[in-house]
Structure formats: C-alpha cells, structure tokens
Image 1 (cartoon, rainbow, N blue to C red):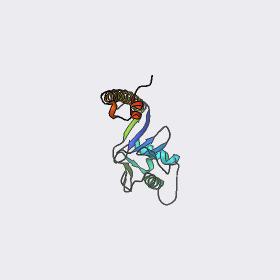
Image 2 (cartoon, one colour):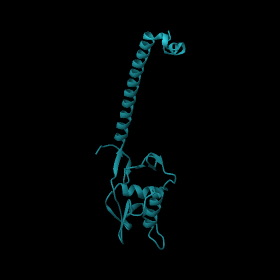
Image 3 (cartoon, rainbow, N blue to C red):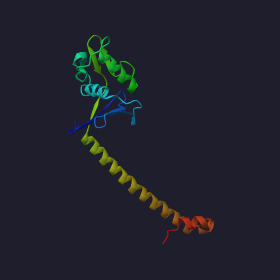
Image 4 (cartoon, rainbow, N blue to C red):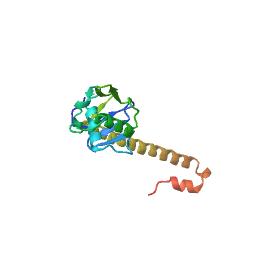
Length: 168
C-alpha cells in the first residue's frame, strides 16, 4: 500500500463509489450523489470503510456514541439511510449479523495523497504525449496534402489549394 495521507476510499461491488475524506462527499462513477450524506452518515460510512470485513457490534459504532432512540437501534436506521442514498439494496454492501451488528462487505481501496499525485503526473504525461502525437500527425497530414497539391494542382479546386498552402 502507498504511504501518504488518506484522501478517500473506493468501494462497492464494481469499485464505482468514491468517498472523499477531503470534501466529505460520495461519488458514484465520478458523479456526486444527488442526495448528500449528512455529517453523521458520512462518519458512519467512513468508520466502516476503515474496517472492511470487520464485524462491528452495534454498540461499538463510535460515531453513534451518545445517540439514543426508543425502538429500533440507531445503527439500523443509519445503515438503512446510507444504503438508500448510495442506491444499495439491504445486504449488498452492509451485511447484517442478527443481534450483533454489521460488516462492510466487498473490496475497499484506500486512496492516498500519493495516489492523487501519481494520477496527476500520469495525466500530464498523457497530455504531453497526446499533444506531441497530434502535432506530429498534423505535420504528416499537412505534408501529404502539400504533396497531393503539387502532384495534382489542376484537379483540386482553388479554394482547397489555398486552404492547404502554408501562410507566410
């Protein structure tokens, strides 16, 4: 794993979700969720993302310390709200263990500041390569056009000849 500060997590069955620690927002396939998570919902999601596959007892869910309700346990309510906002079916990402708690199932990948840096550098390099490739391709195409004009200037309309000739 890369060292560096954690900036977020990718998760979900197809790794199509990203939870940004910096902005405290969740993205699905690069798009911000239509219904944002509340502060507490995000804290709960982050708590599970930091402990993938670990069975978390309802009473051990640190972000809910001090939250009490009569009736249904607050953990159940919050997991249900998070599932709904993320578009998950019950049990798809949060596995319920009866009378105990929940477990985040599936692959979770930690994203660090070094990952972001590396991604930015790769993007800059790819742009540079693309631009060099484009310039080279344009030069070759221009050279071919000029050769075609030279070989067959009579058969090409004058407007196309003028457009293809370099400007001095």
